[in-house]
Length: 100
Image (cartoon, rainbow, N blue to C red; front, side):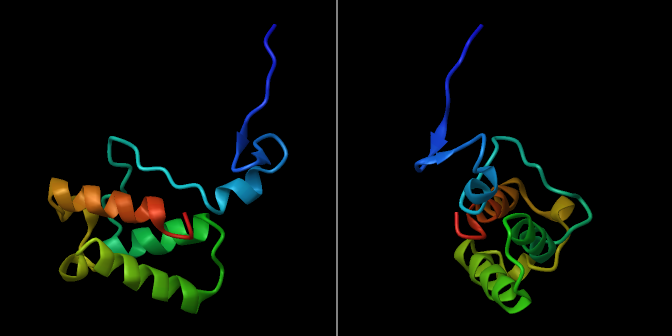
């Protein structure tokens, strides 16, 4: 039998995961993008996953990250039509959106 515990920034992963999820970002090596969602839609979706609820704050954060990863010209393009590098940049923005 094994035992132990894990913490993230001093929060217990067994009892405080909801709080941890509000600042945890993940950027897998392989893209986890939905082919028929745009750059903007991905960021809106993942912002809501991270617990953001205010639509004006979500919109501002989405627009900021679109600019931060230089995807303004691709903001309304389906992810299946992005280049490999553009997909990586979108994945990085997804990892950071919502206060990560």
